[in-house]
Structures are given as structure tokens and as C-alpha cells.
Amino acid sequence: MNQSFDDFLRNTVSLDETRKNRVQRAHQFVREKLTSIDEVAERKTGRGTYLQGSYPLHTAVRPCDENEAYDVDVVLAADFRKEDGRMIPGRRALRWLQDCLESIGTYQGKTIRKSCCVRIDYESDDQRFHLDVVPAHQPDTLQGPIKIPPDWSQSDPRGYIDWFRSQCDGDDWLLHVVRLLKYWRNLQCITPNSMILTTLAAHHSPAEAGSLDDALVKTMSSIKDWMQSQTLGRIEVHNPPMQGEDLARNWPAHRQRRFRNRLSVALETAEEALDSTDEEDTITLWNQPELFDGTFPKTVRGLAEGAKEKAAAMGSGGLAVDPRGRVSTSPDRSGRDVPDNGGFYGDA
Image (cartoon, rainbow, N blue to C red; front, side, top):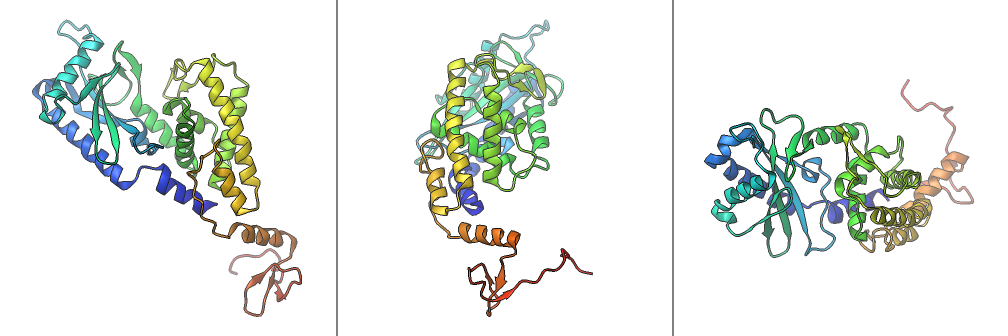
């Protein structure tokens, strides 16, 4: 199923090039215009802005519904202290940022002030996305923790990016598994948020996996087992670069239960799909409502059964070569047996 999963990621799950290009143009434009405003230039730290969240992690996924929006996060790093050294109130910093963005003619009347960011909505004929600009108190360096409104709580988005990239080193499947889990979560209309799900996937990524579907099933199984060992409502998911921060602090017990139950049901079907030797049945299983709900590629390539037959024959000495030089697993063992080479596979 490797090709089917590759097609699924490329054509359905991951952001396509059109979306990537639009996002890139949008965030580069707003970052350039914002940091050129005198008030911002006086406060900003270093270059002033950087990206956080799914986009720089390369784990962003397409909306399941073309009418839904996806978001991209931009951090504005600046000094939000008053002259006497006290912090400007968080909500006042958000109003200030909104005024700055509205002063850029392109965004006048198009911004929305949220609890910890100012959102810019982008729409075109066939897609929507949000650009969320976060005012961050980070006065001395662009490295290390930041403080964000409304209460100037600590966060470390760059530290998280560095941590996740280190988890992907030597792991062939983690990045793809995260995208698949996020897309599955969106199809199921359940929580948790992307940071929790990404962290759980990284913590429960298998040491060994023979394929992407194998890695996905093993990750799902490990997360399910872990959740069943936890007390709902008391689950903690610590932020790797900031162990004192519990990412699950606002994840309510009833939503934890719903996620665990949906994951358990999906895992049963995914395990059945992984074990299936019939390609059509496997595709049908991955398309079940509890998994990818009809969005998984339905092309039958006719490769799986033959490949598994040959793999089994290799293990039992049942391979033969027919008169045309083709490998055969037929019951009559037509053709010449493949000789045993004594376990030697390289050049002398």
C-alpha cells in the first residue's frame, strides 16, 4: 500500500503547491509591511518576526472541506514593557497590534482580535486561510521562551520546532504519521489540538516499522494503550522544551474520552487493514467512516497479493524461474528452481 499512501498524502492530506505559494506570499508580505511601521520597528527584536506551528513543522494538512479554513501563525517578537519596566497589559498590546495591521491599507477592516493574536482572513474562489499574528514579549533575543497575551504566559515555539525536528531525525515515518493523524482527527471532528497530537505521535512513534501503514497503526496502538492507562481529566502532556507547561490543561475529560473511544474503534479497523492480504479489502477498510471516510485512494493496483505470495515463497523455498526468466510461485513449480547461494549476497 506504499504507493496508495504516497498518493493519499500528496493529493489529499498535505498542502498542495498552490496553497503553499499563497501562504508564503501572504506571510512574507505582512511580515515585511508590519516591521516597516515605525512603532513596530522601535519595539521589535532583531528581524522581528518568525513562523510557528504546523507550517514550519511541515505538518500542516488541507481542510477536509474545501470551504473550511486553515491557519498559519506569525510571531511578532518585541519589547512590550513600559518605560518604568512594567508590562503593557496583554489586551492593550493586542489592540496596538491590530491598529498597526489596520494601518496597512490591504488589511483595513479585515482583522479580528482574538484572545492571544490578531487574525487576518484570506479568501479566494476556492480556498480560505487565516494568518494569526501573535505579539510576543521577547526583548533580547529571538531564541528561547516568549511571553504571549492576554496574561503574558510563557511559550517556546522555536524550542518546540527544534525538538520535533530532532525527533524526525532517523525516523522515516513520523512526519507522515503526524499528517495522517491530524487529517483523521479533522475528519472525525474531534480534539486534541495539533500541538498535543503532534507531541503524542512523537512520543509514541515505534522504534521499528516496515512501512508507513505499519508505523501509523503502531503509533495509534501505543497512544491508545497510554490513554487507557491514564485517568481522564487528569491527563498531562508536557511541552518538551518547557516541561513545566501542560499542553493538555485545557483539554476537557469528555473530549479526552471521545478521542480515546474514536481512536480505539479506528485502530481495530486499521489493524484489520494492515493484516489483510486482499488489496480491494484493504482499500475498503482504510475508507471506513471510522478511518479516512471515503477519502483514501481507491485505485487497485493488483500488486499486494502477488508480492505477498513471493515473500512467502522466498521464506519456504518455493520460488522457481520459468523458461522466460520470470519468477514463479505456481503450484506445479514450473520453471527452474532458484538455487541456494548459501546465504551469500555480495561480490567476492
